[in-house]
Length: 172
Image (tube, rainbow, N blue to C red; front, top):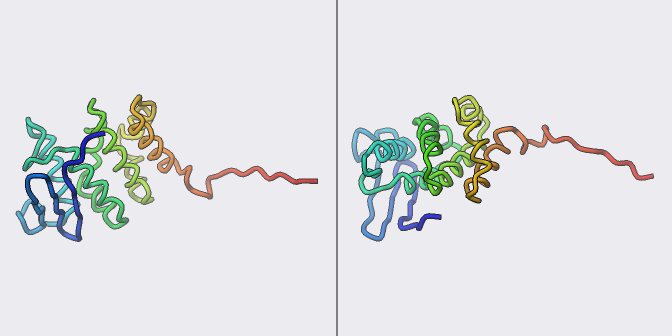
């Protein structure tokens, strides 16, 4: 797995990223580009990093930003904000690439996002995402495999008690 050189703390409208070099706050008021909050700001940073030839934005790599996004997704309210901010195309884009470390972080973020029923439906409906998760669930990398299988387990409803089938045994 990648070496964590940064620590990302999330607050209601701010994301603070600490590195071995400095600390930087991605704030909703920092620039008009990030006028709606931390989830939208970090999704924008990921998009800019992926579009940059050096795969960086303000020295942040997509993997570091995706890790922060995954931490934001733990909060149920943030799950919808993240998807509404346009994270699904970015997650798909990262999963399609050959960078195993980025695939592991992106699939973990998808797994976390999938615990919200509305978000899970959006993930299921998003073109090519489910087949790609199926494909990556057979990855040679243990983290990618585990995260994709976990996401699929939740997305297919296998974690829902109502969908489980039980065998009733009667002891005589």
